[in-house]
Image (cartoon, rainbow, N blue to C red; front, top):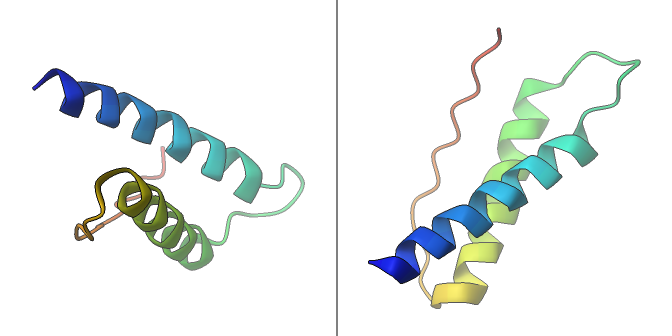
Length: 63
């Protein structure tokens, strides 16, 4: 159980990094590109850690 908490924490950090690199402050956010980028990068990250391919379903909510 502790290992999964650590993995979730690492995944959250990776998500924040990906979104920070994807968003350009002067331009409008491209939702489709961001969602696909998250799915691909997080899928690769989790595969490298677990050697499994989980289903990644990014949900982006605009505030």
